[in-house]
Length: 331
Picture (cartoon, rainbow, N blue to C red):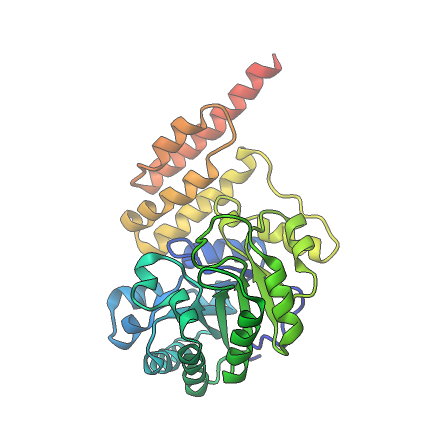
């Protein structure tokens, strides 16, 4: 069945696109824990697609049996590049395309990509229209609430313009580009946009628990969760269970988490090879190794891992260390 945002069960639960994190291995891991999660890829440069960059197409690798539906997020500034990219992505088997208009990174914004498009609403709308006209896939946009400040009327007008240009869904991160990831996300901005659009709207920012997701959902069609899943991929299952009035019992002890952490390592090696795969696992494991005596020493070890064998040894060592500490405390 062809993917459509309109047909997705509400509330939608999406894994946010995070550069350097939401690669194929992490998406597969999250989907193995909570299959109803809709995954977005890391943002991918349209120029890399247009000019057949090997690195770009390597980043676009995915497992169709374990990741679908898959939403590929792209960024750039030339409408014709978005059109070409859309055709390529449709051929590669993407289920939908998301346009990045929210990345606040200086390197991205200085190239007039990402949230820089908020400065030029007409170009932003032209990009949406060009993408939409080039593909039969749904086209969505992820944006912020402004460049340096939040103006409700401006944001509503901006999102209406994107809707008119053909956007099928809009995700709103509740911070300005200037804020980066500081301060609290303004979810009221997303609620106001939803009141004024006919297409689905989902919110993003500061969801660290199932309780957060339930409280922030309100009139929206769903939520998008990002940074809080690093080292805690079980969060998506907790949120989905809460949305359905159920409870998800996530692993509490490091020993219980161990099989999933090792599985993540194995997936990374499988998708990227051992050298690169373990290099990129370091940050994920650093996010998971915390909250127990001696954690900082073990984090120093995991950020220097080079092989899957090393990873398994250190992770098992951590598990045994924690169990021994608990025995000592109980005696």
